[in-house]
Structure formats: C-alpha cells, structure tokens
Image (tube, rainbow, N blue to C red):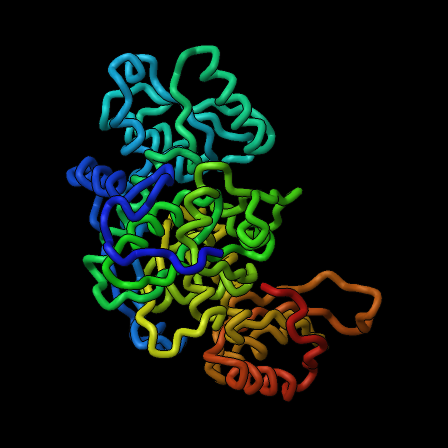
Length: 426
C-alpha cells in the first residue's frame, strides 16, 4: 500500500510522473459537465450507526446515465479522439456497464460503436446496449474471448479499442466522482471504492489525493476476486488464476499496467468482503435507501458495515457504483441478504396430512407476524419419514428472535414438526 502520500500543496503537480494527474481529472470534469449527471450524495444516519461512523454518505451512481459510472470514462476517452479516429469508429468488449457507457458516448458524439459480448450476456443487457445505437456482436463463451476478438477486430479494421479500465482518459473520467465527492461531502475523511480492474479507484484516488485534506482511500474486493492486496503488497501485478464471486462487475483477475501504477500511489488500504456480506448490503440499500444496486456497487457498503476498517468518529463516503442488476439475480441476492441478516430462513417440515396441513401452517406463521415467502412440497430424501410429507417453507421476519417464535408456533401444531432449519439458503 501507499505510505506517506505527499498531498501538502494539493496542486496539479502532486501526481508526479503518474499516467493520470489531477489536471487530467479536472479537464475530464469540464468535458463531462453537460453530459453526465452530478449524482446525489445522500447521508444515512442508519448506516452511520451500523458502521460506527460519525457520518456516512452514499455516492449514488445508479442514478447516472446508463445506470452506472462507466459513461464518465467512456465519454472522456472518446471525446478526445481525432476526426479520423471518430470516422473509423470504436470497438469495445463488455458484458455489462462498459458496453452501455461506450454505446451512449458514441451516440452523443456521433461515433459508430461496436460492442462484443460473450454468449452468456443476458438478452436485456444486449437490448439496452443496442438501444443506444451500438452494433452488438456475440462472440466467445466467456469475456476473455470477447476481449480477444474485439482487440483483433480493432487491429484489422482501424477502429479504436476503448478499454474498460486500463486507459488514462477512462481513469480520468471516473475520477470526476472524486471531485464531486470533495464538493458534496466536505467532512469526508474516508472513501470506500470497489476494485475490479482498478479504473474507478485509480480515478477517484487521483482526485482526492490532491485535496487540501487527508482522505483515506479504501479499496474493496470480493473474497473470490481479491487480487489487489497481494499485488500492491508485492509491488507487482499478481493475477489470479480464476475468480468466483456473485459481484460480476468486479470479477477481474488483475489490474493492468496503467491502473496498477496509479493505484499503487493512491490506495491506502484494501479489504475483502464475502458474497453474503455483499448480498446483505444489496438488501439494505433496497430497504433503507430505496436503491437497486448490483453486487459490485454494494461491495463498498458491505465493507463499511462489516467493520473491516475502524470508523469510530470517521466521516465515510461509500461509492455505490452502479445499479444495472438483472431483476431475478437481484431478488436472489436480496433473499440471501435477508438470510445473512438473520431475517430469513428456509425450513424443512414434516407433516402428517398433505395438503390439508398447509392452511394451518400458513395461518400459524402469519399469526406470529412472519411472512411466508414459499410453501411447497419438498422432494423426499432417504432420511425423511416415509409416512410423513416433507414440506419446504421460506419465512421472513424482523430478526432471529422473531423467526424463533414463528418456528416454535409451527412446531407446536398437531401433525407438524420442524425437521431442519436453514435447509437451504433461500
């Protein structure tokens, strides 16, 4: 990690020989002034109390155009192309937010855009990208194959390849979030930012590192894609062999040369969070903030709430980077999040009289104030009593004690037994 960063003068030259400077971020801010939304910074008393911080502000990029921060970097990079480069068009590889950012930037700038996506890309995301005027090509079973195809196409056609993060202009565009944070949240002394390829945190870190006050920059990664900390500690890029996380927006195996050079100087700490902690943060953002966040966008809040960094008396900012979540996936994350928060359980019952017992089970749960999310006959297993019917019930409540009360009420019913709690994780 970086130690003893010199921010004393707060000037444009404080970045030394780094590929991205404060001057670059300020220039991007001017370029983007009439293009992107200045997204809200909402303070949350609830999340401040939960994290132990004196105050906690949420920078809400789900309210940005295209639903994420990516339009900032894409537009800043594409706006600087020469006339000849604009005429040749651009190509990018992405299965999500970068695709839509490049497509919208192309539409605004009058540049033809081609986006290469892997076969697993949901139809809704393809439709959204096409809706901004891009040509979408489906190539490759995974993102890496789409990336290789896009780079080869750029070499063959003369199109400009717009990288999702390892590009100085893209990084500078993402850094405009940092400038907005400094203006919107004068008390801020800590900022949590997700790390995937490193473009977002490199840009934000560049902006806040030159501020006239010390702001701690904390990078957040999922446990299943935690490449940044070992790389920064070693002083060299150490890629992962593979990744495994529900936060697909930050499921990268490594940073690349440009982002690593900047991140090495601007990041103070890197912490990891589990997918279940991310799911809990997704749930809390939906419930308390009325904001749909994708897993990558909720990861920084997960870190703040999981006590990964001491926040006693701190004024912390959390960058919620995007909200382009598939609704089915979001629902599953919310249910997992409720389970993580102790407010949801999937329970296996054994009943004597199916389906007559269903009404009694449902009534008992509802009388206890619990919400019945699912109630269905389960597949018998070798350990089930062959003379009784296995039933799966999903219950939501206000907390563990409330669920205990509801399950005790079910277990007290004639002909009904609670066989196993948390039979599934919802």
